[in-house]
Image 1 (cartoon, helix red, strand yellow):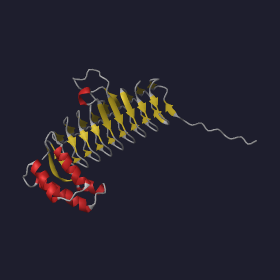
Image 2 (cartoon, helix red, strand yellow; image 1 turned 120 degrees about the horizontal axis):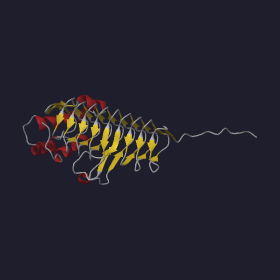
Image 3 (cartoon, rainbow, N blue to C red; image 1 turned 45 degrees about the vertical axis):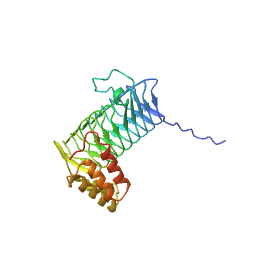
Image 4 (spheres, rainbow, N blue to C red; image 1 turned 90 degrees about the vertical axis):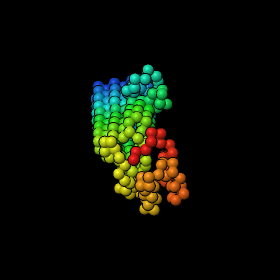
Length: 268
């Protein structure tokens, strides 16, 4: 009789110095490093790596394939004076990277109770995502950048290091924000922003090309930009002109929809 060699499947690897609450839920092949702390109401998906001294707490749900480098504080209480210890949440998608000492707060009752992060994002060292932020996917947030509460960042935006984003501000799709910028108004999709105070300086042509936007659509985006920023029209009049003159496509529709929903005014 031929004996079949048994294989031991490693479901998880938890360092002996780590503290994992018995009620925490860890997926398959999760690695938990030295002195990490994982709280009672945390759920972590498959193939995540939790580095040394990482703290994950609160009602935090994390998808698959995420990596947290040492010193991250994830799901911590909001830095909001109105917070009274209410139950609130943090949801993180798949394949995100959180470099050293990144901090992410969960939501507050006044902001809907949820902070959400999508997939395939890179958070460089010492960056901060405050309570009730809503982030899409394929975003890069560089070192020491801080997002205040209730900030929205759409897909494929890039925010340079040491930038500050004011609360309730929206950063549009494929926006490029230069380093050390101060953002206090909504930034429409597809543009370049830089400075303190920040100003719009043009179209993010490199970003559009890298993300595979067709030349014809890039031309329509340039036309929309000229109508908004070079015609001296009000935002509402600019929207009317875009609808009359531009060809309908997903990107232009999104651009117009963003302008209509800008609550803090748009950056000029």
